[in-house]
Image (cartoon, rainbow, N blue to C red; front, side, top):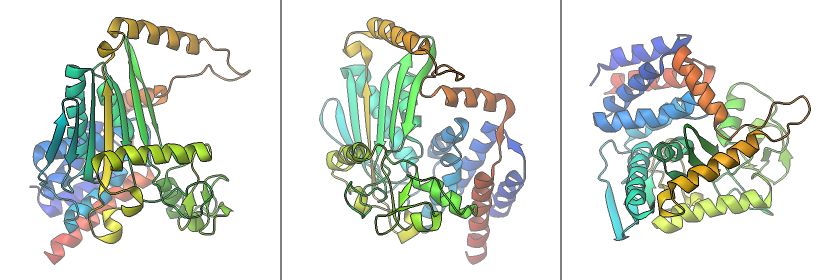
Length: 364
């Protein structure tokens, strides 16, 4: 375990930098996890998962959530050494009980289990209960695609979306991750919330002193549209596509909590809010093209689909359409060459964790 003073100083030093190499940021995050009792192997996995969003150009997910994980580990509402257990009654599906451990680690374990099932049986599905925030859904889907498999990942979350016709936020922003391998090319990767916007973006807008958010993002506590971020955080988030987005959020909820026999989203929250385990649930589905028409046929069809879309006539003055995930892949290559730029949210997260470590050291 690193000395508390040295680790806090390293976090503050990093926050003051302009850029950092991805490997160095991952190592720093891993050091924080280890500092709070997470075994080195699990800490490295957690850091890898958390870093994915940063590598793909997202400033609202990833390492910016390090304070959330740190606070949970510090309070004991996230266990550093959980006793994961698995319940399985059929060959290609299972339920993993995360025992209130890091969702980053439990979800990676569940995804890898589903990958193993898919390689043997053609498809694999694993539901997770008693988990916590799992980072970006795209990480898990892309990990499956990197092995030639189709990956789908889902998570419920604390209440944010009001069912259509209601003013009460009952469903989470319930993200969907999907990735499809392509022959000799980057996979197609979709990572989206079922809300018009992630609630974290509204919180970040408020923290940054912004007085307005775009129309169509949120409702006030009485169910009226609002552009005031201070009011929006007390209300609910609009689903994408109106009733269709509500249906998608409900679908994710059912996959995650009903199949795992875990807590539904309207009964979960983040550990730092209520000082108890969040009880978040996740669901992972992996499909092996070999179990269907076969890899050769799949590759040929995918190549044709991508070719036709790539040649679609663009709107005048606009670039041709790009595949989902293409921007993220380009960002990752640029970051690999140039490093990760330290933006305000990331700087604040690193300083926040440093402050937790210093405060805990003083009171220990």
